[in-house]
Length: 486
Ligand code: URP
Ligand code: ZN
Ligand code: ZN
Ligand code: ZN
Image (tube, rainbow, N blue to C red; front, top):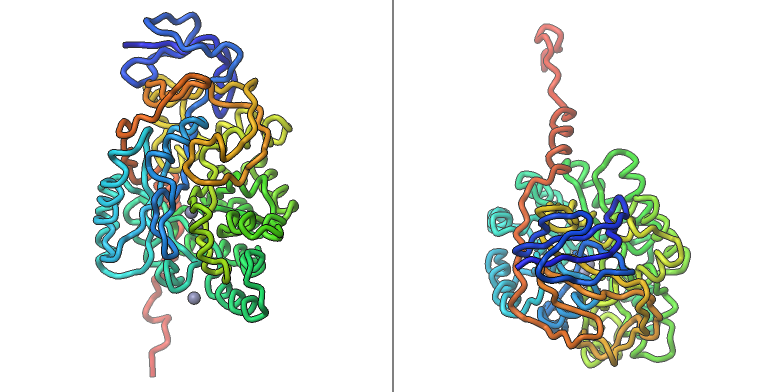
């Protein structure tokens, strides 16, 4: 069975043009004018874009004494209805510490549930010989990126020497190290200080995680990656201090990537000062939302290319779970949501305002991350041979975001009341139309697939070559010119 997406304007990361797309067996077969087929998908008056890739989610993740509520089914489904056709979820080791077991556990949970494709990143939460060994297993299992938490002291946090060792291992394996950049030691000190002063509400979360702590950690992680000679991906960049570190590193030729979140681009720290405890607690995540000046900086980074990816860090805890921290902000499970609304909010606040172009929108929601994660052009591209993960993106459908009508199973939405001006008219996952606006589309759990990602992206290979050419070398000297020891 073939089908043709007809009459739309194709938008890729580098251009816009009018053409039809012929799909066969889940793959883009041909792009051209007046293509014909057995079945047509109407794209008249709409854009046709590569399906969104959200590279940062935590579905059903055990964290801070509880488990994130969004499931693999509800998460992949909600994402698809918003135009996102692939998620990359963070896999955490269980009590036995095994990486292999953790990946298998993630497969066990996700396989029967996923409605569209997923990949995983693996978290490195300590350092020992079996972690060293099992990182290779992870790469062989198609997981080629490893996240290091510089925060969450006493839980997930790793020290600098552990990061150095793990980055080194990433380099050998051709995998990408990632960091959560915040100084966990100082956060813990500030948390105790504000609690002692009687600041127990969610505002204490923001006060105890100032942007300087994120900037310091970003600089430190960049320094470690450079000492090792590996590219580095910095997740959830929220502030100018971290952005500046990334920008400066990139100007010096370091291969460092930065990922702001849609929340950081549109919501600010005043949310934590809301008189309604639940309103504020629902928005507690790390790093926290920042001021408008930081937001402007992140937008500028997307336009300038110093930041490459817009993600969500979707880690959604229902209000009941947020109440665990009612007397102590350090016990509020950290995480917010956004995977359903990432594209429409970015389009409305970015493209409709002229902050970014439609091509940049495609780059930061899909193409750039597909390249960084080494799955391009299978994902993130509209070219013959690519997976037909395609969205017919209608810039004339508007809606008001509300928890009452969302597909996510959470009882609130941090974008509640936002008017968005574009929506997915159709979402295709490997050629199947899995969502159509206004039709009674239903989730199809189990049809999604795990996407293994090969190691050694060309950026990693190029950097290794450059570092090898420029590595410090021993200076050979004539023994006669070396003074003898005493
Ligand atoms: O608050 C957050 N970001 N929760 C999810 C875990 C993480 O740090 O990414
Ligand atoms: Zn430390
Ligand atoms: Zn994090
Ligand atoms: Zn996260």
